Length: 278
Image 1: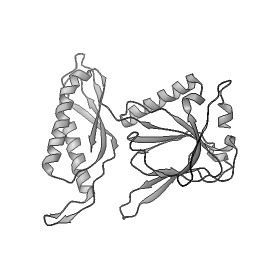
Image 2: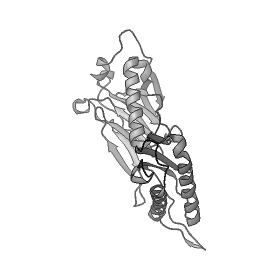
Image 3: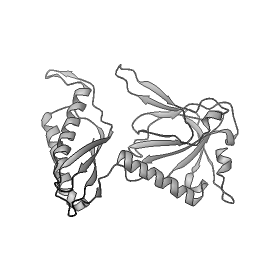
Image 4: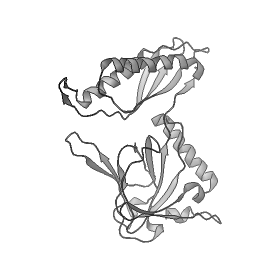
């Protein structure tokens, strides 16, 4: 079993009981205290590399290791204060499990005015990442009291996305263009007088070395949300999808139009650019 195979030799981790009967019950410890230092360092490095590649995030929080046996669960909660993106890395041998429950629960907004619950099976070695504003939890586990047969998971958060320049352009060379791009985005959106959208948008720009022109755009993240329409004496505000379409069009247009200085060696660059809307 996973816990048995990865048990440190003479090192012991202290497991804390997390218990608030109406909200949660589980056992938790620090992943760094449980796993051998080289393995823990490799894990953090792999998660950080994924966060930068897929989300534009520059770091990862300290990791917690939890197990769920009979009666353990975690009711609905949000992790937004901790970081913009939460994750769970399953260490459960799901196919051969001897318990019921244990799925990750995500409460997703629906276009039909009632939220929908999505259940995600915690398959071994599966990383699940979600917007930390989404209420989530773990279904109650039944059928085993043995920690070696438990639902086992690593949890943490990715830190806020940051700018990153890779390739021939330096951060200092790209900064004036990126600053102007961000200013143009916020100015154009303000001029549209739309209801406020909130969330994070992260794009990756591919920049030609000889001309400095943007030759490609990749949308890594878009967690924008807009309020529902409101009627007043001045009329009815636009529906959320119109607001989100307008904001993303402005962001994409400004990034595509950006022009960077040619690189000194003529080589291309890849630039990660986040936008945060509060």
